[in-house]
Image (cartoon, rainbow, N blue to C red):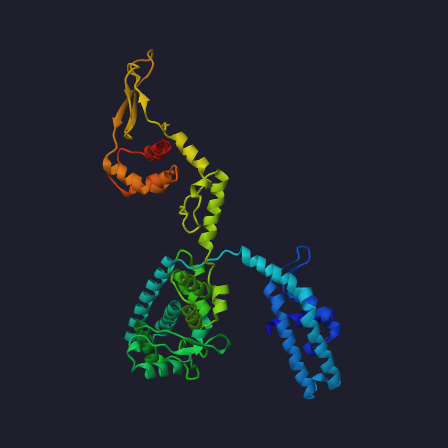
Length: 490
């Protein structure tokens, strides 16, 4: 009704003679509907973009319904049609429906659909963090416990009663991932009848599941855990002194005749619980979170259909609207392969399928410049660590067993050149084994490790690599796959 009111207001501005929507539903005013729809959906003629493309596309359905209602008025000789003959009014209204069905797509829907699809493609999909959901779950449990204790000690505490209603509502919503309206409109007698009729079955001993009305008249089951049932029973016991009799909703606040606002309550506790990203904890994203996580299970089509029924929508809606694309990981892997091809390293994966290729998805292939800068800051090390002592020019130390060396510089006097003395610190078998295992893929693919990877191994084994730096570890891995290549050539 609000959308129709907006479009009628704009039509009246352009044609003051029109007093009602029925008067505007005539073929000669079709162009006025087009202009009014563009205004209320914030159409920009320069960029040819709609600020509200969904409104521009869907308002035509309401207009066609208005035409059908007006035809019924005309056939019933309703006074609303005035002195216009019924046959003439019916003919004009059917012509208007024809214009809406044929011309609206060219005038409005086509461009609006393009804008809507473009917005969806570029929209970042955000789902709640598991850590945030746990924080909120624990916070709600604490609030419920405190409110229940206050209400038990003082039965006339309105604040405690309202807090317990809101917290219990959020707990049920967080568990079931339902739409806020489905829960907030659940009536008390549905919950009570469900508890009485299903208590005889063992499977409903700890959890009861009443069915409430969802979208398009679908039955939507709702699960209530034991703790939630206790809180609800406390609310029901104190309800006569708090809630007016005419309020028949289960989640009814004290001194209020209507249901609570589920969206506002969820947002309130998402902000209060201390979550890192409270804006992501909304009902729609909670439902997307559930649908997306279900992809990690090997679910059959029948399982998916049951899940969709539990969530109150169809299988098509589940796959198309709620579930995030299941090829996100594959897309990321393809992008990595393209970067490897650009670097000329794609030959390492010759003959392998996409599922067989193992790539570290957290490794940034574009940070080579940063690594080079890090290398320049540290001591420069050769890949081949067979070095010559400068002591007498004839003694040579071969580090074929990956013996690590540490340089110390001594100054004997200002006139004489500096002499370098290398102290050999061999790698222990434990160090070699841990490094070879951790960087097995790097050695197999002849790829030097990154600094953060080396430091991760050092931090994961405190005390083992005390005499090794990340650069020493990188050189060790380089020597490993260099020796492997030489052996293969032989």
